[in-house]
Amino acid sequence: MNAVWNGTPGEYLDFTRVLDRHCGCEFGVLGVRLTRCGAHDLTDDQRALNGLLYGRRLAATLRDEEWLTRRPAAAGRTASIPGERRK
Ligand SMILES: [Zn+2]
Image (cartoon, rainbow, N blue to C red; front, side):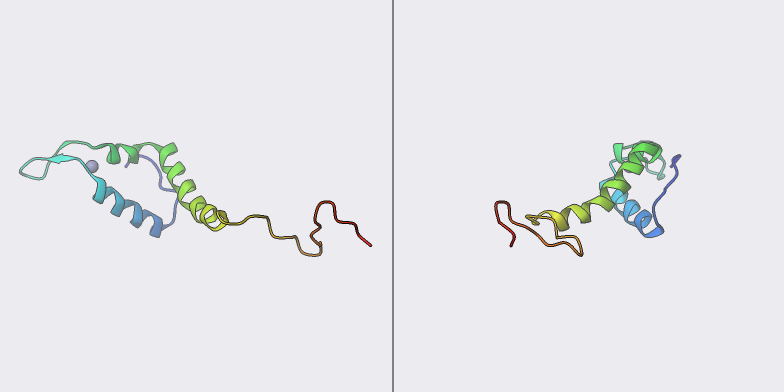
């Protein structure tokens, strides 16, 4: 890994588990790596690692907002319905 991990230790642990799960590297009989897979190539790409962290952190927010039909009213404001007359 030639790039810097900018996430938390827990995020790094999750990342290494995913790498192990999706690794396609080929190893020789003595355990020497013969070919390097795309997943491990990713560990050298700083922009890709930063993008993964950004997407991972953004995903929870997007899932939470997926079924919202309107934004919650800001505190101190009252929602109005278009066309409604105020008295
Ligand atoms: Zn690999």
